[in-house]
Image (cartoon, rainbow, N blue to C red; front, side, top):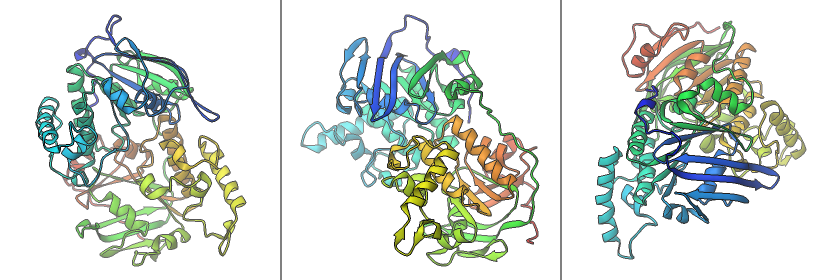
Length: 531
């Protein structure tokens, strides 16, 4: 990803430039939780303004107030120099404010065109609205590089294309101020690069962008100004060109944060996970793994790198017993555990394998369950939580409270619905549930997706502690920096095949980038003898 700052090409942020948005003394509470405390924020017109902070710092709450999803308990909103009252998203749109949420709000079985005009029809006669939207979308696509097939169904588009549809929806409704909440959390590096080019074009055309993100590299690459929030308060607003990732991380967390992983050299033991010639197909029958061979020893982390969509998801699901293989073998502690029946995942858990899935919302949590319920999900039939049909709720709550304390899960309330936790804290719930089972093997997908800088440091340290305790860890991540800093060995997947193996101590981004693009190296994956 190109993250070279281009501040010299950006509109001036000098005093006197007009303000697009002012928020004055904004307060918002949810019961006993004071999400926003006397927040002041000024966003200059025609700039990209970043807002960073830990999960739960109040960033999304503040922007939801600006977009009309929440109402502030007190404070004032000023748009274009005029005090306004925003009751709902329709009021926000009327004021030229649009928002692209982290989890897209699209109808999967509608076309792009139908999603864009939904709720913005000119009359009961749809044809004039459709014709107008088609012309306008062609113009917007041309002006801003937001090319999307307008007659395609949403469910047939990539995640990056779906995000472009969300941006098009906002622009079609006349948005001059665009709020993006964690926009790259679900994008590949290439899709993120394209998004940044779109944002630069929008800014240069006079649009105002408010970017909520926890990725400091993105802040340094794309923003003109950056505001830091911590525990519901605004800590600092700085010109991006006059700060650095280390300063921003310290402001976010309130202490010095290591932006690199510190670890001792690995001391590998016996092979605990051994995969040979594994072939796996997706739900449509297309082979996504084509003879993958790899092994992981006790006391080491094997990183699996690659651009999303090259078989990583199917690898994790097959290893976790969630997806049957067409051929090949998976051995856990020397035992053939290749999935052939529906209860394989439960069987593997009892045999010492834990799984942190890539998508916590789809596969890791039931968000309508309480935190304590999710903390035992998949392990609820274990003896420690009761026997037969009777669940020992007291024991489950006690376990959840231990997880909360050890993993610093916020709010520290096991009786809250999991939907009320931020993404980073939801991720900690999943990680605590799986790591605290003392597994022999941990397979983990995208461990820090949508997680803030402080939580990333914590999660990385927990993974290293597991390695040092003699566990075998297979790590899948699209974050190349994460793979390089955590892994003891790296294999690269491309189009369902292992195209090479690299030593993270010596491999540079160029070498790994070539492998990720499918340029095979001369090295083949090292096979370790199973003991």
